[in-house]
Amino acid sequence: MDSVVHFEIPADDIEKAKKFYKTVFGWEAKDYPEMKYTGLWTSETDPKTGMPKKNGRINGGMRKRNAKGEGPSISMYVKSIEETLKKVEKFGGKPVGPKMEVGGMGYYQFCTDSEGNVISLWQDLPKK
Image 1 (cartoon, rainbow, N blue to C red):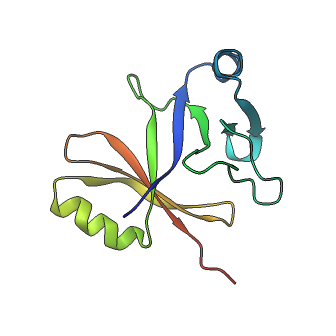
Image 2: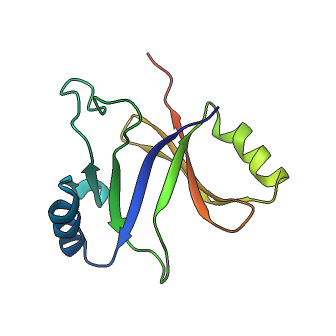
Image 3: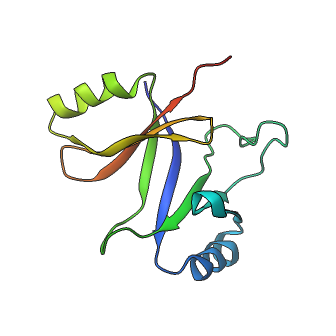
């Protein structure tokens, strides 16, 4: 079973949105200017791994909104983006944009589900 491992929130005004999530939910935010991205921490994390300490919790990120009406997106961990995309297309979804490598950690691919919702797939880079 593939699990939800990440979420993304699009925003028109990143600073305003960071303040909202910090004030309302107590989330922490860290900007990554080289990636034009803001990481969001929703839970206490392990300082060594950066992963949430409690099971079932996920962290996410925020980026500039690409299109009017674009909403939050969830990311699923998959073993193979290519194999998963075959199933996505077979059951009514389609890839959106190219597969991208992210910071030497893994690959990210947007796609739609059968209802046109944009979701993303995450595949770890092989361990060396």
